[in-house]
Length: 406
Image (cartoon, rainbow, N blue to C red; front, side, top):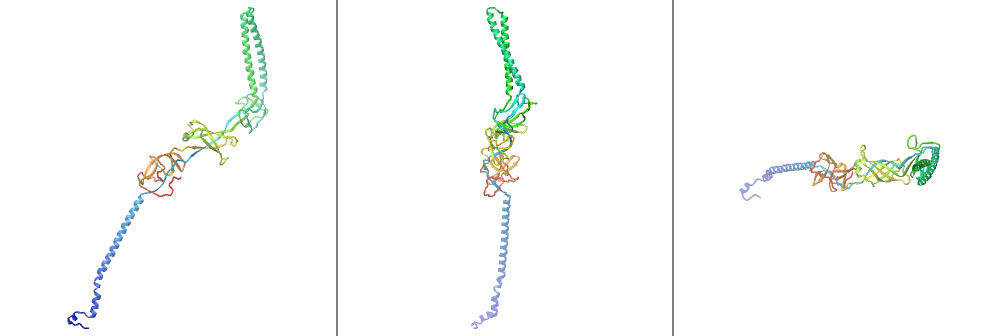
């Protein structure tokens, strides 16, 4: 419908022109909006990049700082120390071991025991035929009888002269001569008696007897053999005996362990011939002196052997129990640092390492006994680096069981 006002009608664009102007009007704001949006996107991207880079640099700095602080494993020392067994070699010896020699000359008449025989003290081992001694004894006894007869006559003469002197029938000189003869005959009789006693003693040695309870370990003579008295050449040993009810074991203990060896201590003795079995002995005496050549202390261990199971001359191992030092702890050997200050160990205190000097007691191989410097509550660094310094900060790696272990 045409407008009422002709002027208004003139101002209105034609219908087609109106639609075109409406469409063009929004296009004037599109470019600024797009530019603003682009600026925002670029700004956001730049901010995000800068922030990400800052976070990356911060994370890298933290990682660098973390890498600069080493991570260590720690253990807690074990209170006390394991019982240490000092094992040393030795040889069994008979408690008494001696050769039996003849004390008189002659020929072997008979022997009664051979090797391995168990004999008692005083038991007859052999008889020796001594014809020379027998003949000398018979002559000595005859000389004694002659001397005793002369003595008896001298006693009668001296007594008679003493009585005659009272009536002055003999002179004083005669009386004195009779007394002198009496004293001389007495001395001769004593000499003859001593000679007879000596020969009787030699004759008693015809009986060869066992000097102690033991076994015969050797028989070196046979019937008819010529026997020479004594223990030196040309005499030879008749028998050899050993007492094995108790065996001696002599052991050389190194000087470093000598202070721990005490008389009265027990020791276990083992032999390869008896696996899994040990024999208990007692330390009965020591030399109380260090051998300057071997730097060892000689000790004697006596082992009861009532059944004779152990034999003299056997190779044995003697196990001594050494006492541990009081208030000591045990740590692995790989916790120690060898520095110019001496042996040290790293202990964690307030997140830092403190190097403390330690004093070692016994060395057990993988473990060592520390008698000074550490307590059971300390955290000791395991496998410390050679570059580890006191006061360095460290991280402790968590462990399920941080007790000392080899």
